[in-house]
Length: 215
View (cartoon, rainbow, N blue to C red):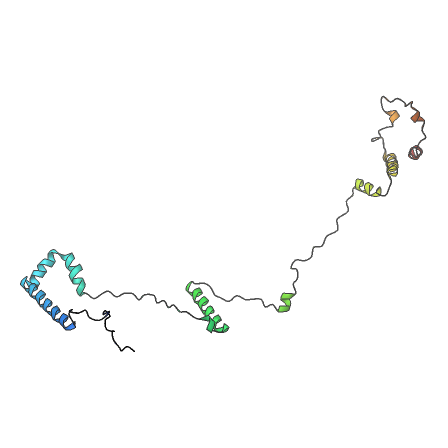
């Protein structure tokens, strides 16, 4: 088993670089440089010379020199965002529901959503299963009787034979005939010539006999 530390033969991957200055040596160099800078400043005229230079270069003095001595401006505290990850597999259903409800309530509060509880209608399982049509059943109102002579005539002749319908028409025309609507017989029309054919000697029908009796 290898001991602690870097194994022999492997390159060094950390620590101070070889032949570089350590902390104490860097402090000595910094002190010497600071002494040299201060001595140069005194030889150039010190504070009086710097005031004369600053009067000619105010913008440089304020932005490059004075700004380094002033305290840094206070920063506003950034918004703290906490990202939490929850393993729902290890939670019970009640605990998971609580966390979900809290997240929804927090989001609604941040967005200004009204979370006033809405009154719910209590419905029992029996009422939910017994469905009823909300609209009343359609009731067909009986139609008012319409006084239609043609329809009444058509209904009365449904059970009649064609010959009986012809007879009914002749009887109806005879009863309803007046001077205003009388059209006259074939012999009363202009240009009538008696039929001399053998068919004119046929026997009259029952309708014709009945019509003659009514006239």
